[in-house]
Length: 326
Image (cartoon, rainbow, N blue to C red; front, top):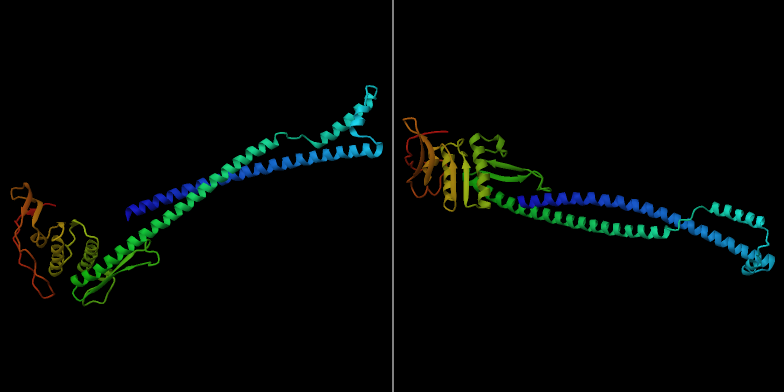
């Protein structure tokens, strides 16, 4: 589940990077589109001016034909060196002024348009690739979320089933269950532990005694162990708040797990030490020196098959009398 969550985080980071890249591509695309529109307007204006000039030329040719009965080629042939230069210059100046009014024609507009069009097409392809990558990432995130929900849901159901069983075992006549605070969004929800000992009607573990809360917490812990077994378990002083009867129930539970896995418990409780097959520790001798303790213990092979409220705990096994350090 942690790997899947890391994968989800990595996918989310990739999605944000893709979104940033998409925004950058969109801005470049808009700039290119603006420049393309400007060049198009220039090209259209030049085309309009060329059309206007061609129209005027046609008008002049029509005037020659209709007004003077001359073809343009014939009229040009009629021009000689004897023609009035001032009149020709005046006519030329008039034409120049008219050409000036037309403005400067951008002869490179067609080439520039092709360059911008090529850039626009490239940006469009890049944008399409970014959008496809974003869709793929969203699909991956959805798939990872689905797998996480399936994995969490399966684990939660298994743990909840084992918790109900263990509460009945640790609290004879009691009931317990695990509840999601938000079943609609299980990945963001918390888990509430409800436990009701045999003679109590309370459900919230905050209303139980210290020992009962500890036993309910241990039931939850061992429910996880049972639903998802491990070859090794390590617990650190989990039983100090338990009374003798509840401690014996806890030790019976530990003994059951010890048949199929290695269980290590850090404890100061002699009762807990008594069921161990091997004890390790640091002790303080009477002369004030410390000693590393490693001793195999002899004890009955199994505890009693079951313990109820009125039954006695198993016979104690002597543990070497040393004063623990720390």
